[in-house]
Length: 469
Image 1 (tube, one colour):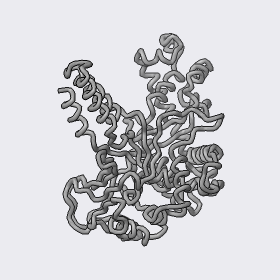
Image 2 (cartoon, one colour):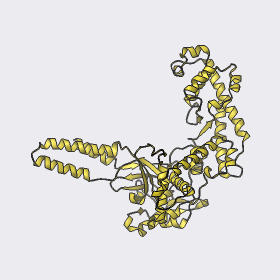
Image 3 (spheres, rainbow, N blue to C red):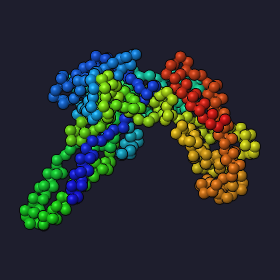
Image 4 (spheres, one colour):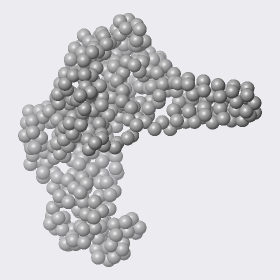
């Protein structure tokens, strides 16, 4: 019975859905910039050109560049759960992260996107015909903020983006310096490394690592049972129990609780655009050791072949992928940390002085240093931790004593209406100061992508202002 239950679990878990590290764009759809459209057409003909690779692409898939945007379409109707693309694992680039983040001899651990960048570099030195066609289809340049002029970012009206780009540059440089260049097939420049990182971050999928089907444990169990029973070392029931234990442990480790994370770039599948209402899903097929693109509903002729990239803020989209979503429901707005707030202005708003011991307590708890994140998904907009910090900041002596002069104490009793009113005034003042700072900056200076990003931030800031002011 135990074996039957786990066999059923095996069948149910043979296909694993994958979350994508690429993100969505304006109008809920976005194409990518490709170097050669001819290479894309060659990729779609891969099943006839590279028969030995077992690459499968439905003949009904075609391309279009309507309005200057590239996308995949179906030429004929498609059934639900019909497989449109199947790419064997050997024809992908992948990196398995075992979770070991220990530093090597004082050098930082190579992150997944750095490893894939190195793999891309090595692949370019001697690619197979299939991989060469895919490499030729990739964009040669990117429009992400890391390539912007520093002066544009320094004067940007949305200050967190300049800090994020600076951190990104530092991280990429540290990762590049940590590479053991002696193990590379050819010299790797910093610019080529960053190009590979951007390819990886814009095209790689991630999911729990499920190893390819391995017969060895099952063969071992069969031999073990035969020897155990054949030599009279025990009963058939004991052998069956041991067999069940080994098989169940193998299935648990492989499917139910895999401990590793795998990042994969899958050629051809990476041509798919994003949609908030995708027509297809990507999954790992265990028994065929391949990645498939499957229709999740019936599709008519000329339907887009697209997938969902996930729920991301415009900050993430803009920083890592060079585009934004108009009216993004998952967007956030980042205000400066409380430590950077104008305390005098807050005191003026609430009508009393903010005690130094409150600031000290919040500083010790590290509640003044973090940025304030406003989220559209949060009904109150402000993060609960920020609200709690403000309650401590504006608390009366009586409230502070009632909480035993501890921040955690404010979770254990209901603060007064006067306290809540002061917290609300502080929120308004923080927003007022941000509006003033936002308007004092510059809005793109000829960079259309930056202008689009700032326009979305302006709308988001106006949304939060309307709730408090």
